[in-house]
Length: 87
Image 1 (spheres, helix red, strand yellow):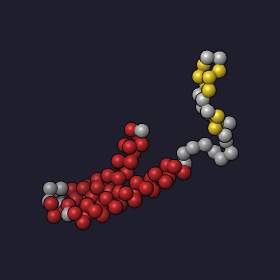
Image 2 (cartoon, one colour):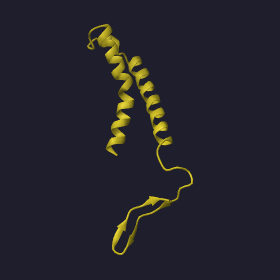
Image 3 (cartoon, rainbow, N blue to C red):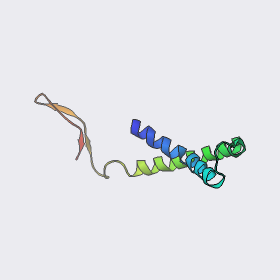
Image 4 (cartoon, rainbow, N blue to C red):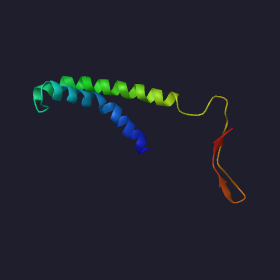
């Protein structure tokens, strides 16, 4: 679960990091408050949310089992736990 949250945070914060890098390279400073207006932060948040949704859609579509496989749940056989798997 922690890995999923970390990946989501990276994709959401990526536009902010790119904007900060652009400010650092073009203006040489990140401390000018006029460059970080609420409108700019709103656009970056919208871009981050969009990027996050695309990343989630890509991860969901390429994860999982191939079509046609059946999940067999975990069970106990002879006192041992047999993990769940697909057939």
